[in-house]
Length: 454
Ligand code: PHE
Image 1: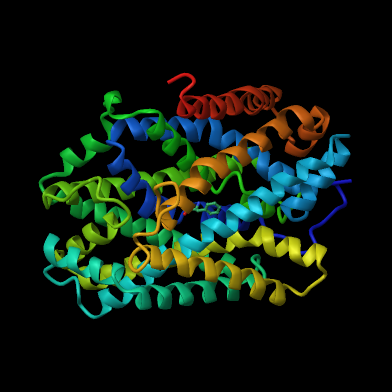
Image 2: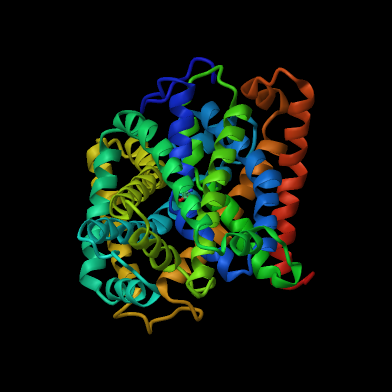
């Protein structure tokens, strides 16, 4: 079946186009905003080691599995899973993986868009010279001003959501390819430049030590769960984003190779961000575990004090916004593809609906930083709750099910055929990782948190 089938939503023009789009999805706020602050909150090196192990043993095998399922099913994750379950003679209930992903996508995008809005608002701040001569006090106050303003946050969140829906309405395989092709490498160069600045702070080695010298007494079950959840989040796994991108992938492209390339690029960006940020944190006596504001309170200090910092600051926050945009479109694409396929409505209309729901939820996230900051559920504010629910629970559960499906439910001849691995040993290695290692690791981390083991 899969040989002749094509996605009704279009196809990537080449292998490179897919790599760009999937890297665009993977590289985003997760790498530059989230990775540094959760690393800071969880004590540094040991957390990073667990995260890297999770990328290797869980992330890459599941990325291969998710892309493969998408390419074979050629539809939205919900319909893909239901067809592939049919093909394997398994129960239709497998399509709930698709539903879980669609819901996770909405929940993530709701807060993702608010944070991306922060980045957008920092473009303006950079332009108007707000970082000039910045120190921890002035930059802290600048950030606090944004946090305390529901109006500003909702405004920028709205701008970002509108941009996302505009691109998704036009189809992800169109203009996006061109934009990402140019923006990703530029972002990479800018990060290297920031690392260069970090080297001049006198605290470079301390930053590196914090990031790479593991002290396992710093982590507990929750830190391990956060590291694992982040491996899913940063690689865009477990919710159908990579599956839906895989469904636009032409045949005869090596899924294993592309997955490895994407994962390496994603990891490199996160580590560079960490290497740029922590030296600045220590040089300025800032708190590594200060939370979601970390990059907004540290990097402006660098821009405000380096040569050419005005321009680099503007560029950086523009690029960060674009990196967020190329991720956000993949968060909503599974839902839009489903609406187009099953409700028979035009893409534009599907976008308006999906966009409005996400926007509304996002407004509550923006309020959770100010007027609703006292409102908590299970002891967490709305932002923290959504983040915990999606990254630490829904994505790993989604990924676990995808691994089980690819490893145990799908017929081996089908996965072998779809992956077209020329070396049988590589296929066996993947099969082993996806059938045993990845699901067992997710399971043990969950057990550990529940407290049965830990
Ligand atoms: N991977 C993206 C990031 O790191 C976020 C994302 C998660 C995108 C899940 C799609 C799906 O910013």
